[in-house]
Image (tube, rainbow, N blue to C red; front, top):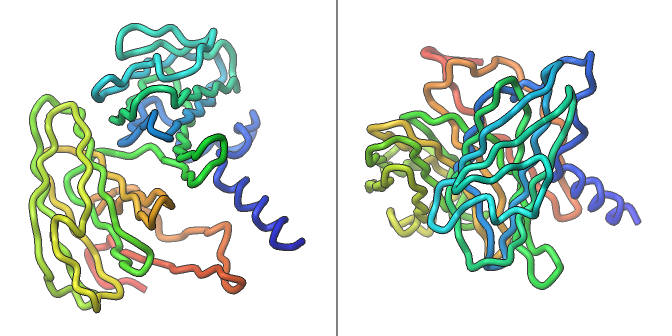
Length: 283
């Protein structure tokens, strides 16, 4: 019984949570602009975009989808959404209003990235799911990402392969150098990934750099010559999850954090990964 309840709780955690209540502190992730490095539809994949108006007045957003055959037609019809080519206008008629855009999954597989540009702040989340028939096989929440030049991923081979998603919204191609390091910081190997302008590129780390069989943990460091939004997708068979890239130049990094859940036992394991973004030693 307790496992059933726990499974239900974890399923709820994958979701987006309740919209902000007026009068409470706003979501730290709220903003006028959002960039999702990955959106996919078809081939068993579906995407849901959740947008909540956290301003105290009516709001309007411009949604842009970029990728082969990717346009607002992947979403079910919604009266608040006016499609126009690869873009759409979203009307949030009142303060606190929320809208859900659900893709149909009816097309052949297509993927790319999405940008959201709003007149006033909103919160935005995306849920990506892989289904077989009507049953979900895997799902994860995708957070809005900030384009940058220097990133890092933890590499944990025992948890599966690491897929890296690179999305560039600039008008020029980007080149990202990837270096794999072991736990001691020693270099194992490196390679380059080219990200075409206004496009999304997918690269398996193990196909770019051979990963030693005895590597239990390490880090992948990425350096790009232009701003790129990056997302990690650890894969284990059909099971995947989202791993936001660590922005090594993040000026908004905090010195304190609250992790709402940690589990151990009963098949569960937790791994805490810390990266020091200070210019000196830290404690």
